Length: 113
Length: 111
Image (cartoon, rainbow over all chains, first blue to last red; front, side, top):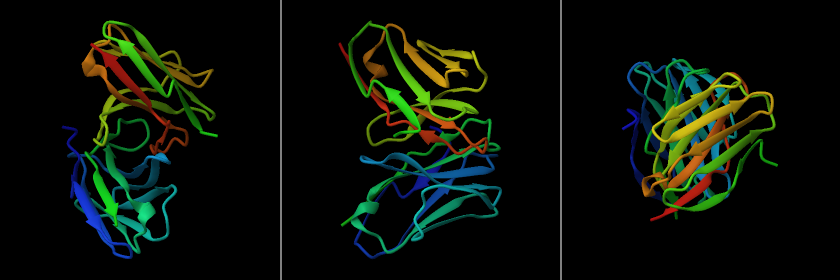
């Protein structure tokens, strides 16, 4: 158990819908990262938050947004969902960011039908 | 082309054999991370390497970092079926903590 909790584990939704994925980082970790893993693209970095502030952005679509709350949990919002958004979405957390180990949650498997 | 190349893409070995997985970056490495993933599950942190020439071991797994070549290798000694899975290398190339990942190496160990 990495200490990073993601909910829900599975999500099936229809095209055009909006979903929210939730992540609770390890106790004491200030940095949260979101990644998307698909068969064709592999594991891709989406966005990073550090102590409530956005720190880095990767290949995140405009239909996607995230935030980190004062209690340090984070949410990833995916809207106007398309079939191609079906993937495993991982959250990871680390103590500070650079130079510290990042631990991953078990992921949320999103299926868009 | 991939910023982080892993080789081989897949590997089948007999139990008890040694094996090596390589990871090469096209960018300067500020940290190199190795993870293991069972299909469809989360990533399990194995090791983090930061300094050139650094070598770390955990049980039968050893990872090394060659900073000059921007390469890392993961070596498993006397492989066991429990070593089977997908091995992913992740690199911090921006000094910010976010990682880029290789495509992974799928390891199968035959009893």
